[in-house]
Length: 515
Length: 59
Image 1 (cartoon, rainbow over the protein chains, first blue to last red):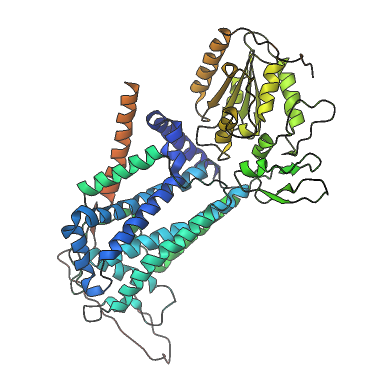
Image 2 (image 1 turned 180 degrees about the vertical axis):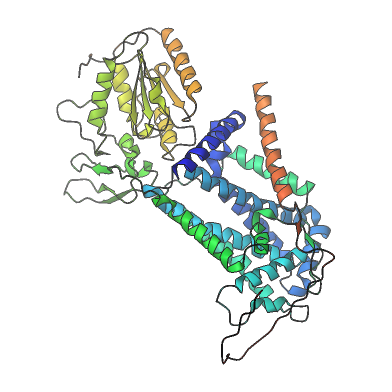
């Protein structure tokens, strides 16, 4: 499993690098697969609602109504039909990419299992939606799908009489199954939407909309494709004739030709076995648990910034339990906490300036306390040998620790957003470094979802806790690295060192500090 | 120039995406049965309860 993950990661790393060049990190489509999935779903739903206005749900007139949609009203309903088809196909591509990329990034094990296992049933519903949709056109492809599906279902011990008998010939054909398909095609997407909603339940500020450039780019692509290659029906269904050659949507119907070589019962086994194994991947093998965030009530004033910033809905604000004059206190839901430390970076009491008492903020990670971060910062300041002293606070997914050298010291943490902005102020004002760099994951592609965004907002004084205005921004950089971008890392460091050389030496704003 | 190349590369990716969608939405065609072969379906219905289980013949 680890080898497969590694191979996929190498492939995705190359694709990510290529897409970074074309779209920039911020709009890299691979970082927005989930949101693109939602986007395509809404396109399919919206166009479907429009098509339903003109679609005749009766078996005898269904084909004619689709022909009207395609030919008579080609400029609107026809385009809608094509968009409906292509956005559905795009959804399959996006979902497969989303699933395999999350797997390659190992974003499925541990407490992330929930999003993974709730995504698996959605896969099943996508196919029910797509297959039932093709059925409704009632052309030769629909005829094939109807017969192949019912014969395949008949291999399951579910029906007293074979349901494929409904499609033996034209005289056996009734409206019953067709009406059922219409209902399935309407209700399966609703169930899918429910699953998609459950899928993101443990994600605060879930990204369900792609950024505007991507939304426009993909929409234009689909519209151009719809005009260039409009979706068309095949010859009308005729149960007295066996279709020979069929135009096939391989995104949805790929399993059907397998029925020619694999018995239906075995194919069900393969499919459901595959889905079961996929659902169990988060435990193959299980992740090692990390210590979760811990609230120190003596230092928590119930400000709810940790609650606002937690990307995994792992913090709840509950009624105060210690009799202090605050209304609320933070409570960590250990089942959701990913130990990313973003809550620590959000806590206004996580400041390195306190010296009278031990540094214990309102919330922190047991294995990565703020006191240690302060000590590490001071220790690193003594390790510089020559040149402009650059202190890098790096997330453990940026691979920035490789930048350690005689003028650069790297302190790693689970997520760069774990760093309270006051630590940057502390390091520069106490002259512990000439420049500070924050190295996070790729922009918009944070391993812990929102770390890079919150950090950027905190630096830009758009989000509490702000980085103080007195901090010289020329001495601060915020880098976004992919694990594989070693050349970019070196280049960014060299440029920063060069810029620091052109600045006067750092002068302490406060007293010098030896710890 | 860099921006132009960037947009060009984006256009290439979008075009590749569209071609993938457009092609695999209908192609390659699936040959379900040979045009020279007729299909005959025999369906036996047995609405009543069976006295003894059916004997499965060799395929």
